[in-house]
Length: 272
Length: 342
Image 1 (spheres, one colour):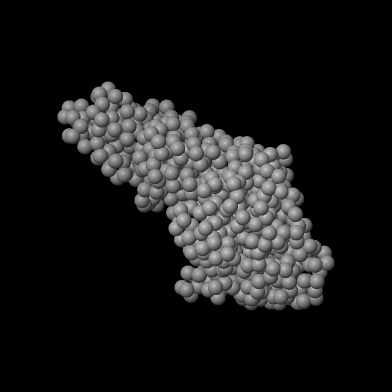
Image 2: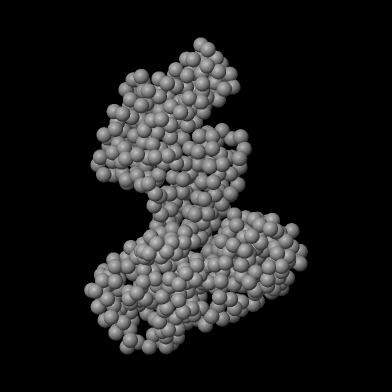
């Protein structure tokens, strides 16, 4: 089991992540039942910790088997089954999607290394990344539990709420882009592309008219990102890290957009 | 409706009865909110996803002005909400008292199901000729336009007939998957017929470049990627607001689907005066002017000025068409698929 310091190492990052999570609208899990536990994280922290330890052990077992008996015996598919079996899966998916994406990325990193017959050193390298993602996720969930306990986290809803203002819409778009990375990391590029198209039509279209009055070049950039850059990255052979870079660049632009629209809204005339 | 609300509404109706509303609307550029009674009671609005928060600002202002009003809002895509209203009615329940839809096609779905109340004549009489419907009130309009690149074209080079564009050698930007474009094709289908519309789509597709949305079309026109495009008017006005030296201007066809004026609209679904009086608030000159200046939408109440940069609606010659007929989208989608533009 990872020592406690492994969790502490990511505490600072987890703090920032949790703050961001507070601002995002919690949404339903795309991978099945959420379970009531996600709205009562503190009560389940021991269970989550146990599950993460269990996962680390199971994934390690797959790699050990690969080292001793080769890829057929390793049954790399079982890694996905292990991950889908635990409640911790929904806990991190509903509270911090970027780290959730890293777990999928880590699982497929190990799995593909095994399936491709990579050296054990390479597989261990991928395994270490996966372990780090898992512990990082546990840190994020522990912090989310603290905020939840203080009433600072929105309840996870089983249906998505409609954002009502431009800043809320932009936050929702950022959250959806995190899910794009998660789906791509889960090796579901078509699902990721669908999220991009839906996000453009159902969300970005609603705010870009107001945004173009503030910064036409920024809209031009984001139009290109939504309709060319990101879909192309998802269609091609881009790595998860490359897709994440595109998304992070878009999210930075969306933050600029949000600041502009908040300022514009403050200067807007009253209706009556 | 609760007894308390009913009594208050009766009082409100009495106050309204003293006002010659339609006449004052014409004389003063719409009824002022100051002339309206307070709204009191519980009401549920189904609100189609619309203009990036500006409709929400209107709702917030109405709430603020009417502390006795408990306004609940369910939001979603306009089409989904229209389907919900019809499904709820079939199931024998009614959750919405009013429905504010961003396109009139969805309005048609609900009126055809017989779920909309007839509106008072003094209310519909505030609206411009051609936009007076017995069972729903258009709130604001949007005009189909031809945004063109001012470096590449002069106005004289642009045909004033949408059908003539099929035979032109101009490069065109369009967004066939976009709902407003599909409403425009529906209007063409109703006005010109299936065959002429299919021929037009085929011919235009040979010199058209596709975009995901109509702001994308306008931006492509501005960049000079194409000579002109098909888009609702407000994208160009908003782009020019943010970029005053943008190389784009608006042209209009005459009396055909190319200058269709489509509208957002509102309807009352439940009995009583509260839903009707709520609708009156949206037709006030304050709300109409706000949506014109902030969202660049076209006011449809007589006497309220259009958004800056847009000619008066009186100078545009939109086709005569019942906007609720635009609900019949399926044949349009089938047609667009059959000619390979979708």
